[in-house]
Image 1 (tube, each protein chain N blue to C red):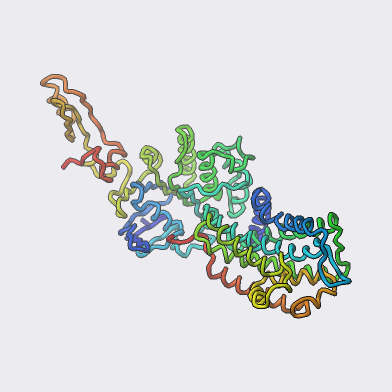
Image 2 (cartoon, rainbow over the protein chains, first blue to last red):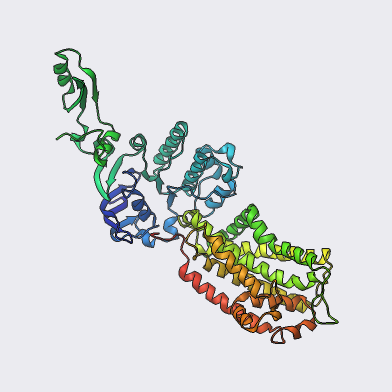
Length: 285
Length: 268
């Protein structure tokens, strides 16, 4: 891929004390693409994203972000990034508008501050001290600070934590507008519906390794998408994976109505869980 | 590049000063503390006099220089070291480190905040001393020139040392526990609360290794009558030595900051 905005090759990270957080992670993100990094807590998502952002040094491997090595990314390089960190952290006494106007000044070609405030739905709170906002509102300030510099590449590390459903929907609309403008986005989230809704490709990381990588609708390969038929027989839960669920259901119904019959087409969440080792969906051989 | 560094630095100064005065605790423990101490000493020792016969001073007159020096230490070293350690702990520095803000602009903002608040603090101290306690202020322009350079060199040195010291606390929460004892001990051995000449010689020597002793001496040179110069342990205000000692600490501080300052503790 020649127009890769992010290139990660055999990335490894060993923390002091011998904990191996990343054990050879590789992926690429093309320009304009939204890429989701999925995985359980402690799998290495945040370590990966923080290496890409330049906050952490890698132990080995190749990392290229916007054509530069993040370990030596200068201020001009940082001006092209937008970063929404996982934790909100500080709550300054400054008002929403003051904080955004202040940060906008760091960038060569920032967005209009009031437009950004409106985009995250905080117009009514523009003059309120960030300290007095609720957790979800502070998170929206984080997002606003991440996009105010008009970034080419936006990192979103669990951006919608603490959002109510309505705020999440309007956040998704905001992300779609950024996508339309050509912004490349790296997203980590625990909401699989969010990843499915927003991203075109994803990687699932478990134990510091990429367990699956591909287009959202192809993730896990075709066998992970084989429909599942579930029913109960003599009080025992049964399930079978088949490409022809209709035929199976017809066969089951031949001897009367099967108990609690359902046909499931694995969602991203089901596929995800099959990779992170939950027992909810067993990958049939 | 330099233009944007300076422009962002100026923007940081405004931001820092505004937020400084929005924090009730810093305003009290850093900004007003020397004033509170001056009020307490002046009222508590209002019947006593200080100094050699014929040149006796009131408590307010005697303590004003020490409180001004303490103000430099608090506004510079205590304020910076706690402020930056907290900012490192609460993610402020991490956020700034992800923007194209230059660390130099950040330091300009911090130094500007210290200069503005330190100057206001000194002004309030001098004003209250003069109006409430009738302290007679020097009229000799030379003395005010001394005040100007002792203030500027002192507050800058203290601020830079504070930035260096901010690397020491392991977390924002432990910052006050690490910094306050250092600041308090320095004030007691450097002639802020206790007359310096009355301390044992070995303790005076220890204090002479740190900048506060020299700053207090410089402030005495500005505000105390000439008769007091003979009461100094060396028999002189030693202005050149003050400049030398503070200048050395400033250089040490700059090197420490250059070597140790990071937006975040990598791999913590």
